[in-house]
Image: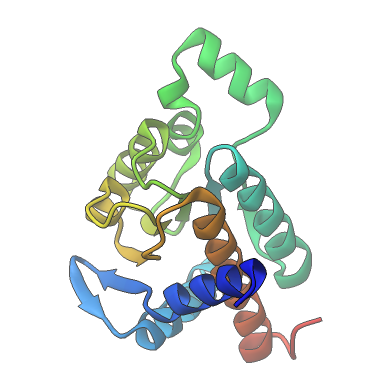
Length: 193
């Protein structure tokens, strides 16, 4: 089998073995995914805001999906990753606060935080999760690498992809995020485009 075939097979196999949990209890993946779609619909109907965050490649994925959800699904979204925001908060407060700071200022119980972290252990992502809970927000996490990562422990609805490397985890997360948006568009907005 070629390198590319092995790579895509590993990603596909892991996606099919994604472990989903809700409030610490394991769920069937399809059930958790359906719950995620309905959560998005419910919070959008309540005029909630969807905050996306991640570091590095996960940051660009957060920005990408935030924009896609804003443009295609008419969702109110934030990525909390504008250059001036990240550099100001990092310089004036701390890098651990780059996501939590805005959530702490404007988050409401109708809002949702979606975190994307390959390791699931980034201190700024964990602080964002904790701050979101303090604001009464619902937290969805996407993680990989170590099965015992903190994101999975602290999120409400969690999707853990059992893959060992950043590139593979990031590829799987992109599939899950696009699948969510497309499923939402198919179910509630007349179809994906």
